[in-house]
Image (cartoon, rainbow, N blue to C red; front, side, top):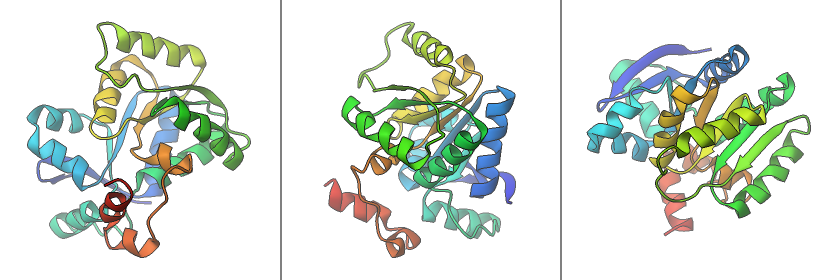
Length: 225
């Protein structure tokens, strides 16, 4: 298990951490009923923090920022001698967390994407993890939150009995949402990027060699030009 704290990558603080430690921290926070804002950043996510000072401050306030992209892992290894042998990829971390949630009886709330995607995602996850309790699934409004709406969303999540929230809004909207929700919810919030689309079967994963080479962006460009 590797968990060596945060390191600076172009002004964005990224955790030197592996799947085992990241999953353990999330599940521990869920059991202890305490907030934990988590995101998995690839190069695009890091660059949003480099180019936007307000978003930089937001990202650096997250409790856990995993190296989602291979280039981010390479930067940690090159600049800080991290010795990470693998990235901590949002869709894969999602499955590891859900596996533990199912085993530990921790209900999960899904927030983001579209009604159609959630309609495919929920049965897909229930098929993968029959013991998983999905407390609720709420599609994105695809507009800025009106005054007081964050509190209303937080009330719905709390009322559902969820202990973990998965957020699939795309970068940087999902980080904006998780950052706003953190003071309102006593549970982990995971900004998981394309995990909803992948696990709903709407996006095909790139070949393993492209993932290892850090070329997932090229694969995604081909699928979503």
